[in-house]
Image (cartoon, rainbow, N blue to C red; front, side, top):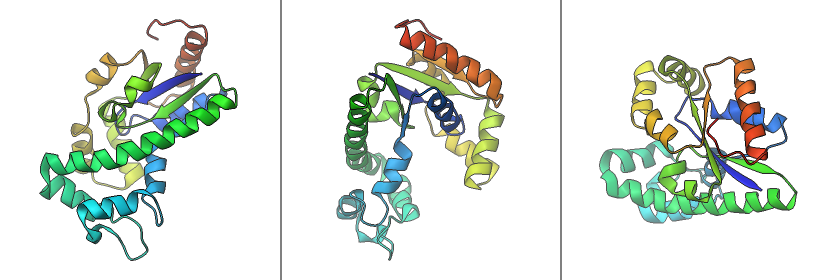
Length: 205
């Protein structure tokens, strides 16, 4: 079974890309969903994060106070705090990804996508057979983030600027998908990539 990393910044539309791949029988694993599950009440990340950053990051219902954690990590703790956070979350998330991939392998799937916003930062790119970069033009990304997360244009732009640039992601990927909103064009790109992957063609799509 091929393990395919799906890389791209916020607003690039990786979720839409994954849904189209699913139409062709290729499932995906959403690491953001795994993280949300692990930081919900009773989630396995909760006690480890509380031990590391203090119980002030836990809400009354037992879930993670994301704003409090973000303040500690990104405003007060510096680079060291960010690395401590990633050391906890990346390990648990990647362990769960490996379990799900094994289930897909046993089910006889030909390939599976791993939708990971921090694919390269976590090191999971080294466990992928192929990597697909998903990009979109900046105005499209900004509008998608605003509509999805209900934040300001300035906040959306800052989020994009804080992430890896498209050029870097493309340089580390085997295939490229340009996702500016035309679903018909998106499907053509994905069909070409699937044909290439399943035929064992290693050329960039």
